[in-house]
Length: 328
Ligand code: ATP
Ligand code: MG
Image (tube, rainbow, N blue to C red):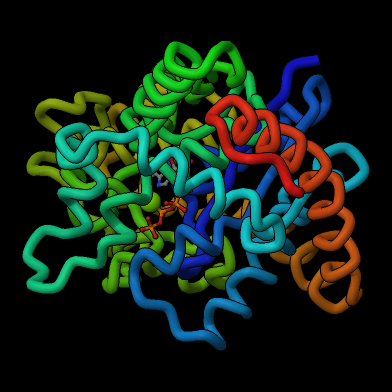
């Protein structure tokens, strides 16, 4: 059985980008793979988080995983901070990383741009993410396109470790969706949709009520002209809306394009909103049930136990290979 690991940061309201780019694949992979899905709270604190919001968001992400269809009997669902091996292997991966390669990471450049005080955690985020993956000897990592570069680094670090200290770690493969790997902001299709964007109009949150979804999509930026055509070069805004539509309805972009060929943006956006609501409304109903069931803590506890068993084993192999004195 292949092993799968991935995670989402409890750094705000999860978005349709997180769902299409990552979570949907968690749900499909869990059936055939040994699966580990984390809430990466240690990553979230690479930018300032209010303690109360971090706690609330961590539980909320767990409930969204369940609402999306992750089965806790199949996949381990856990908080990264509950398995201390992540922080420990993260340090080791930091020591294996070069400043130059971390400086080239586009997520670091994007998130530090224009700030006068940039947290060092933001800089060493990629080696911590590598540790997350390598601890479980994951074969596959379902992520959106924006994480491809970090996956490449993880592969390099695993190779570097094995070369220096002997075959210990597994070199993972990214698992990226064909359509929807990079959902763009509703207000600017040159930027990816992100939950940490201060403009809530730039994203659809998974928990946005239907009327908010309708309003946000009716206000979504469109390109000049009125034809609904998929042309990311010349019509980036409409192309983004088309890929959201295709993901929610399960149709191909061609089919949708021909349906709106002579109907213009207005009709298209109205129908798009109903497609999105059609996917999110049932998810929100399940979310509310799960939050009120009081089951989340138990599920997170079980998930952490399962994860810790694997993580502890890898960490002790790593320590031994690196020459740390075994516990005396
Ligand atoms: P933040 O702004 O705090 O970084 P985020 O929306 O980028 O939040 P992450 O927790 O960093 O979310 O990423 C979780 C997963 O969602 C990753 O696999 C990432 O690749 C995927 N993802 C994030 N944004 C998008 C997007 N716009 N389109 C497709 N996938 C995405
Ligand atoms: Mg992100």
